[in-house]
Image (cartoon, rainbow, N blue to C red):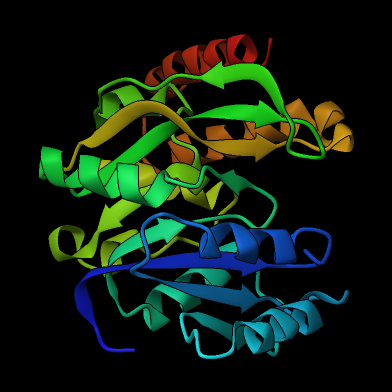
Length: 256
C-alpha cells in the first residue's frame, strides 16, 4: 500500500483479545470512510488472537488494508503502539484498543473535523459500555479546546478517540514512552510541545468496561498519575498536588 495524504493508519495493540478481535476488525471494515489501513500488533498473545486475525485477513481476500505484525516478545502496549507507528503508511494516525467500539462514521466525522480546524490533534466524546459494549448512558463530554495546562488536571482524552496528523506533529512526538499511563504521558508531551487538542463533542466511541474492572485499584491509578507529574512532567510538589486533586475529582464525577 502506497503512502497517501488521505490514508488513516489505525493502530491496534493486541494481547489476548480473542474474545473481541473479530468484532474489532468487522467494525473497522464497516467504517464509512474507506481510506484506512488496519495495523494489528500482536504482543505475543497466549490465546487464539493471532489465529483469528489471520482468518479475518484470509476472509478479506482482495482487501489488503489489514496487516498483522507478530511480535516475538511481549513488550507491553506502549511498544506495541510504537511498532504500529513505525509501520504506518498513512498521514493520519488513529489509535484503537481491541476491546473498544467505534461508531460506523467515526473516522469520517473526525477527519472532517480535524481538517475544518486545521488541527494536529483531535479527540471525541465517548460513552461507557458494559462488558458487552452495550451503552450505559454515561457519556463523557469533551471541551472544544484543551491546552497542556488544562489536560494535566483531567483525563478527558480517551485513547480510542484520538486522531493525529503526522505532517504537523512528526512521528517521534507521538511515540509513547515506556511508563505506566503511557497514553496520558503522550498527550501531555504533544500538548507541552505547543499543540492544542480540539474536542469533537460527539459520541463516536464506546469504552467497554468489564465488570471486573469496576473494582480496579484506584490507588494504583493515583500513583501512576502522580509519578507522571513528578517524573515525566517535572512538576513541583504544589503543582502536582493541585493537579492531582482536580484530576481525582473529575475522574470520580465522570464515573458516577
